[in-house]
Image 1: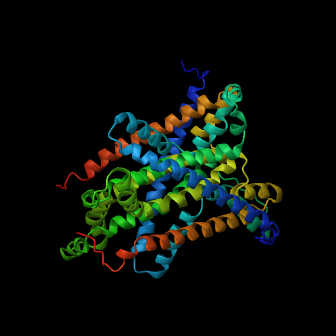
Image 2: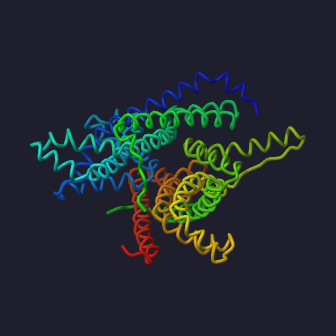
Image 3: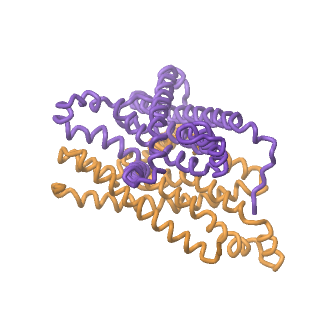
Length: 235
Length: 228
């Protein structure tokens, strides 16, 4: 084993790690913007609203991300002429657009499910208390339901963030040079297989546990008023 | 109507291999999970350390990296060790075995956490009572702990299975002819990638739906002795 070769290419690997983080953050931000309306649609009483949301979530959670990425990136080629006509081909030709689109749709579906669970786990009493104070509609949602649901959903959402960070490695299959992509490229150049993969694995490990730590801190901050209480599991 | 240009059977072949890899990997994962949860719950400090390192590392690294590391890294590692000892050998790993072992190894870490939680949710008195009426440790495990743990673990293991079967699509990258790679072959030959990838996604969705139903049945079966 000779890790001096890794040292030589370390700047490239760090650049790849930066790309990985960038893709993760961008996909999460856009995905979150879709996830909350989607979660509300899932909870809607009108089946015309809730069933399309249900099917969307079912499809993106029930199929592998790799298929979703290939379906968007390679699949769009089948409609090249149509897409050119409406001026969208420049987007679908771009692996970055396709990769991020797939990640956004995927994380939106998973996060929507998390927030749906969290919103329905908000205690009825809280909502009734809010109503008793004269709040309703959007105000009630913004002041009572959402903050509480966010706190309930945060641990699960943290897991989703970590899942997405690791899932971004799949965009390397459509030529994007993220940490995995860069490692694969350097390996085909230098043949130092396990040196680079082990380094990449270590870098992912550091990023993952940095995120785990950040989310744990955030959870602590969000639920500071609950800290002193000793929680015992009911048997 | 959907025209597959005669490539439908290719996908069916791929599906069979996908399910075969998935089932074998699941067996590996559950066995590793049992071993790992024992490692986490036992009093042996080295076993604790090994099990904790296993779950920490595997859950922190993408499946794709681990897969590539095992498939391409292991032969190179063995060869360079052999070369340094003066032998000249060439090692090739069978992609089926490499894929099954890697996927099983990865999801073994998740199964470990599920089973650890399940064993921990069995009241301590259960094992103590079994010991008190004279069962030895193995019998206590087989008759008292395992059946109850499986009931608690079933929802979690079902989730592991559903994530695992989707993860088998990654094995196409190491050239195993499972569903995903067959789809690629078909879409290259017909120049209709959208049709074939969409079809493949629906096949995966079908697997997920069937698994969900099976899980529900299994949970009803496992909870048959419990009144609500």
